[in-house]
Length: 167
Ligand SMILES: CC(C)(COP(=O)(O)OP(=O)(O)OC[C@H]1O[C@@H](n2cnc3c(N)ncnc32)[C@H](O)[C@@H]1OP(=O)(O)O)[C@@H](O)C(=O)NCCC(=O)NCCS
Image 1 (cartoon, rainbow, N blue to C red):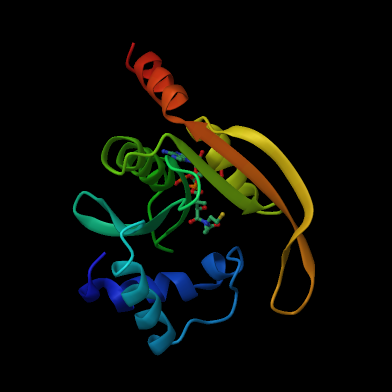
Image 2 (cartoon, rainbow, N blue to C red):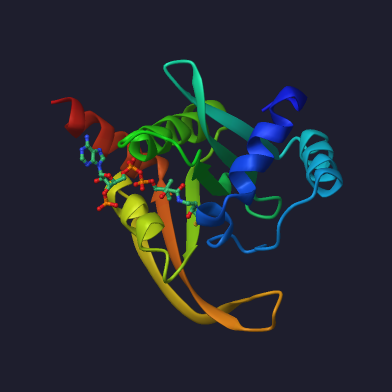
Protein backbone atom coordinates (compact mmCIF):
# COMPACT_ATOMS: atom_id res chain seq x y z
CA UNK A 1 0.00 0.00 0.00
CA UNK A 2 1.27 3.46 -0.84
CA UNK A 3 0.06 6.93 0.09
CA UNK A 4 -1.80 7.08 -3.22
CA UNK A 5 -4.03 4.22 -1.97
CA UNK A 6 -5.07 5.96 1.24
CA UNK A 7 -8.53 7.17 0.23
CA UNK A 8 -9.39 4.00 -1.68
CA UNK A 9 -8.51 1.80 1.30
CA UNK A 10 -10.31 4.13 3.73
CA UNK A 11 -13.43 3.86 1.56
CA UNK A 12 -13.31 0.05 1.75
CA UNK A 13 -12.54 0.09 5.47
CA UNK A 14 -15.50 2.36 6.23
CA UNK A 15 -17.98 0.35 4.16
CA UNK A 16 -20.69 -1.05 6.46
CA UNK A 17 -20.04 -4.67 5.45
CA UNK A 18 -16.37 -4.34 6.40
CA UNK A 19 -16.59 -2.02 9.39
CA UNK A 20 -19.10 -4.17 11.25
CA UNK A 21 -16.56 -6.99 11.52
CA UNK A 22 -13.59 -4.92 12.62
CA UNK A 23 -12.48 -4.54 16.24
CA UNK A 24 -12.56 -0.77 15.75
CA UNK A 25 -16.02 -0.26 14.34
CA UNK A 26 -16.33 3.53 14.21
CA UNK A 27 -16.00 5.37 10.90
CA UNK A 28 -12.31 6.16 10.31
CA UNK A 29 -11.60 9.83 9.52
CA UNK A 30 -8.92 11.03 7.09
CA UNK A 31 -6.50 12.16 9.81
CA UNK A 32 -6.83 8.97 11.85
CA UNK A 33 -6.29 6.92 8.70
CA UNK A 34 -3.19 8.89 7.64
CA UNK A 35 -1.72 8.58 11.13
CA UNK A 36 -2.33 4.83 11.12
CA UNK A 37 -0.66 4.55 7.71
CA UNK A 38 2.40 6.59 8.77
CA UNK A 39 2.86 4.57 11.97
CA UNK A 40 2.54 1.35 9.98
CA UNK A 41 5.02 2.50 7.32
CA UNK A 42 7.57 3.41 10.02
CA UNK A 43 7.30 -0.02 11.65
CA UNK A 44 9.42 -2.72 9.94
CA UNK A 45 7.32 -5.45 11.64
CA UNK A 46 4.19 -4.37 9.82
CA UNK A 47 3.13 -4.78 6.22
CA UNK A 48 0.15 -2.98 4.68
CA UNK A 49 -0.68 -4.63 1.35
CA UNK A 50 -3.14 -3.90 -1.43
CA UNK A 51 -4.28 -7.08 -3.14
CA UNK A 52 -4.67 -6.75 -6.92
CA UNK A 53 -6.79 -9.03 -9.08
CA UNK A 54 -5.80 -8.70 -12.73
CA UNK A 55 -4.03 -5.45 -11.77
CA UNK A 56 -7.22 -4.02 -10.23
CA UNK A 57 -6.97 -3.13 -6.51
CA UNK A 58 -9.46 -5.52 -4.89
CA UNK A 59 -8.64 -5.84 -1.21
CA UNK A 60 -6.40 -5.02 1.71
CA UNK A 61 -4.23 -7.22 3.91
CA UNK A 62 -2.17 -6.29 6.91
CA UNK A 63 0.45 -8.47 8.45
CA UNK A 64 2.00 -7.81 11.86
CA UNK A 65 5.08 -9.74 12.93
CA UNK A 66 5.02 -10.60 16.61
CA UNK A 67 7.74 -8.63 18.43
CA UNK A 68 7.84 -11.16 21.29
CA UNK A 69 7.59 -14.46 19.42
CA UNK A 70 9.93 -14.43 16.37
CA UNK A 71 8.38 -16.14 13.33
CA UNK A 72 4.80 -15.57 14.50
CA UNK A 73 2.48 -13.04 12.92
CA UNK A 74 -1.17 -12.03 12.87
CA UNK A 75 -3.13 -10.84 9.89
CA UNK A 76 -6.21 -8.84 9.00
CA UNK A 77 -7.94 -8.39 5.65
CA UNK A 78 -10.97 -7.19 3.77
CA UNK A 79 -12.17 -7.22 0.21
CA UNK A 80 -13.28 -4.16 -1.74
CA UNK A 81 -17.09 -4.08 -1.47
CA UNK A 82 -17.42 -4.66 -5.25
CA UNK A 83 -14.94 -7.57 -5.37
CA UNK A 84 -16.00 -10.41 -7.68
CA UNK A 85 -16.89 -13.88 -6.39
CA UNK A 86 -13.81 -15.89 -5.58
CA UNK A 87 -11.64 -12.85 -4.90
CA UNK A 88 -11.49 -13.69 -1.19
CA UNK A 89 -9.92 -17.06 -1.72
CA UNK A 90 -7.40 -15.58 -4.14
CA UNK A 91 -6.56 -12.75 -1.72
CA UNK A 92 -6.01 -15.34 1.00
CA UNK A 93 -3.72 -17.46 -1.11
CA UNK A 94 -1.67 -14.45 -2.19
CA UNK A 95 -1.38 -13.22 1.40
CA UNK A 96 -0.23 -16.64 2.66
CA UNK A 97 2.39 -16.76 -0.05
CA UNK A 98 3.60 -13.31 0.99
CA UNK A 99 3.64 -14.18 4.69
CA UNK A 100 5.51 -17.47 4.36
CA UNK A 101 7.81 -16.73 1.41
CA UNK A 102 8.50 -13.00 1.66
CA UNK A 103 7.93 -11.92 5.26
CA UNK A 104 9.59 -14.97 6.85
CA UNK A 105 6.57 -16.05 8.90
CA UNK A 106 6.54 -19.58 10.38
CA UNK A 107 3.16 -19.41 12.09
CA UNK A 108 0.31 -17.14 11.01
CA UNK A 109 -2.54 -16.43 13.40
CA UNK A 110 -5.97 -15.15 12.53
CA UNK A 111 -8.92 -14.12 14.63
CA UNK A 112 -12.49 -13.23 13.84
CA UNK A 113 -15.60 -12.26 15.75
CA UNK A 114 -17.38 -15.57 16.35
CA UNK A 115 -20.40 -14.24 14.40
CA UNK A 116 -18.28 -13.49 11.30
CA UNK A 117 -19.23 -16.61 9.37
CA UNK A 118 -17.56 -15.43 6.14
CA UNK A 119 -14.20 -14.95 7.84
CA UNK A 120 -14.44 -18.23 9.76
CA UNK A 121 -15.34 -20.17 6.59
CA UNK A 122 -12.58 -18.33 4.76
CA UNK A 123 -9.90 -19.33 7.33
CA UNK A 124 -11.03 -22.95 7.29
CA UNK A 125 -11.16 -23.09 3.48
CA UNK A 126 -7.60 -21.79 3.33
CA UNK A 127 -6.52 -24.62 5.63
CA UNK A 128 -6.14 -22.84 8.96
CA UNK A 129 -6.58 -24.93 12.11
CA UNK A 130 -9.30 -23.93 14.55
CA UNK A 131 -7.73 -22.92 17.85
CA UNK A 132 -10.96 -22.36 19.74
CA UNK A 133 -13.27 -19.54 20.77
CA UNK A 134 -12.76 -17.24 23.74
CA UNK A 135 -16.01 -15.90 25.13
CA UNK A 136 -16.20 -12.12 25.48
CA UNK A 137 -12.56 -11.73 24.37
CA UNK A 138 -13.22 -8.52 22.44
CA UNK A 139 -14.65 -5.50 24.23
CA UNK A 140 -16.33 -3.08 21.85
CA UNK A 141 -16.15 0.70 22.06
CA UNK A 142 -19.71 0.57 23.47
CA UNK A 143 -18.54 -1.71 26.31
CA UNK A 144 -20.16 -4.93 25.06
CA UNK A 145 -18.12 -8.17 25.07
CA UNK A 146 -17.92 -10.38 21.96
CA UNK A 147 -16.71 -13.94 21.43
CA UNK A 148 -13.63 -14.34 19.23
CA UNK A 149 -12.59 -17.39 17.14
CA UNK A 150 -8.87 -18.09 16.76
CA UNK A 151 -7.05 -19.74 13.85
CA UNK A 152 -3.51 -20.78 13.08
CA UNK A 153 -1.52 -21.98 10.09
CA UNK A 154 2.10 -23.06 10.13
CA UNK A 155 4.43 -22.73 7.18
CA UNK A 156 4.77 -26.53 7.14
CA UNK A 157 1.00 -27.05 6.89
CA UNK A 158 0.79 -24.41 4.18
CA UNK A 159 3.58 -26.02 2.16
CA UNK A 160 2.09 -29.53 2.45
CA UNK A 161 -1.38 -28.34 1.42
CA UNK A 162 0.04 -26.34 -1.46
CA UNK A 163 1.92 -29.37 -2.79
CA UNK A 164 -1.11 -31.66 -2.52
CA UNK A 165 -3.28 -29.03 -4.29
CA UNK A 166 -0.82 -29.06 -7.19
CA UNK A 167 -1.10 -32.84 -7.67
C1 LIG B 1 -13.57 -12.29 4.95
C2 LIG B 1 -13.60 -12.17 3.42
C3 LIG B 1 -12.27 -11.66 2.87
C4 LIG B 1 -13.84 -13.58 2.92
O1 LIG B 1 -13.98 -13.58 1.53
P1 LIG B 1 -15.07 -14.58 0.88
O2 LIG B 1 -16.41 -14.08 1.28
O3 LIG B 1 -14.73 -15.96 1.24
O4 LIG B 1 -14.83 -14.31 -0.63
P2 LIG B 1 -14.91 -15.27 -1.88
O5 LIG B 1 -15.08 -14.33 -3.00
O6 LIG B 1 -13.73 -16.17 -1.95
O7 LIG B 1 -16.17 -16.17 -1.66
C5 LIG B 1 -17.49 -15.62 -1.48
C6 LIG B 1 -18.48 -16.75 -1.53
O8 LIG B 1 -18.69 -17.06 -2.89
C7 LIG B 1 -18.41 -18.42 -3.13
N1 LIG B 1 -17.77 -18.49 -4.43
C8 LIG B 1 -16.48 -18.26 -4.71
N2 LIG B 1 -16.26 -18.38 -6.05
C9 LIG B 1 -17.47 -18.68 -6.58
C10 LIG B 1 -17.92 -18.93 -7.89
N3 LIG B 1 -17.10 -18.88 -8.95
N4 LIG B 1 -19.23 -19.19 -8.08
C11 LIG B 1 -20.08 -19.24 -7.03
N5 LIG B 1 -19.71 -19.03 -5.76
C12 LIG B 1 -18.42 -18.75 -5.55
C13 LIG B 1 -17.48 -18.84 -2.02
O9 LIG B 1 -17.53 -20.23 -1.79
C14 LIG B 1 -18.05 -18.05 -0.89
O10 LIG B 1 -19.20 -18.68 -0.39
P3 LIG B 1 -19.41 -18.91 1.16
O11 LIG B 1 -19.45 -17.53 1.74
O12 LIG B 1 -20.68 -19.66 1.24
O13 LIG B 1 -18.21 -19.68 1.61
C15 LIG B 1 -14.74 -11.22 2.95
O14 LIG B 1 -15.96 -11.80 3.29
C16 LIG B 1 -14.66 -9.83 3.58
O15 LIG B 1 -13.92 -8.97 3.10
N6 LIG B 1 -15.47 -9.60 4.66
C17 LIG B 1 -15.55 -8.30 5.34
C18 LIG B 1 -14.32 -7.98 6.15
C19 LIG B 1 -13.98 -9.05 7.16
O16 LIG B 1 -14.83 -9.66 7.78
N7 LIG B 1 -12.65 -9.25 7.34
C20 LIG B 1 -12.14 -10.26 8.26
C21 LIG B 1 -12.17 -9.79 9.66
S1 LIG B 1 -11.65 -11.10 10.75
